[in-house]
Image (tube, rainbow, N blue to C red; front, side, top):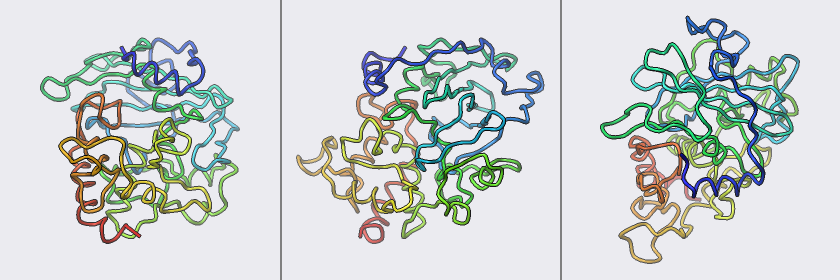
Length: 343
């Protein structure tokens, strides 16, 4: 069950009660499969892969979106798309080659989203709806560490700010100009959709005209900088953005693709900016969001690495720190950032 602290946080950021439609009790009835027994995906569901995956304790994932016939995504806000009523997005999590859970988000229209999760049995013959409070320790992912299926309020804590958002399906994430150095980069398979597909099939409207000829891309002076900013966009920017619950902290880690948006926003709001959170075992006044050349005094690095539930970032969804990304971000700060990304 979600802690009282996170329940209060979710209530605070949502500003309204969670929508609770009657989701089917069985995943096979949600529309994902045309043949559940053979795990055949319904061809109406579009397969996709974000270029900057969210770290989820090393899970492998598959993702699909369904758009009702004759509808289109509204990209009037290029950073936070609005999805037509009836849109469904599924995300399947596997550990050790076995399906463990499948999450479902459904658009109710008017910017409202509903959330559900389904837990697979051991032989993958059934996936049943999980209670709204979630489910603990469904599979061991490391000795003594179990994977939790989130509750509805946990989902809302990440997906609800000033607006309710479907994360990971966006212009930057679906850009065909993919970042080859992105931590945990996935290789799109044939038939997966991207931004160019959506534009070509008229499945998106009111988007910036430039997207038709220039795919969104993070502007950075180094390849490591591009990948580092992309990782933080996906793993930190869901809360640290101008419309998120932590906007008042002044740390912006979401990369904006709006026309005219400043490329250096993440750098300006993080470099050499004092952090309210003191990095343990450092002298008072020496903790910064990101300190060029000094990952040891950079709060972003410490909070990525700890799994103290009151200190870790992201605050939900992981039991294990992303060691590969932690090493990558630390090296970027220590060797690359001080000379090449600071302006």
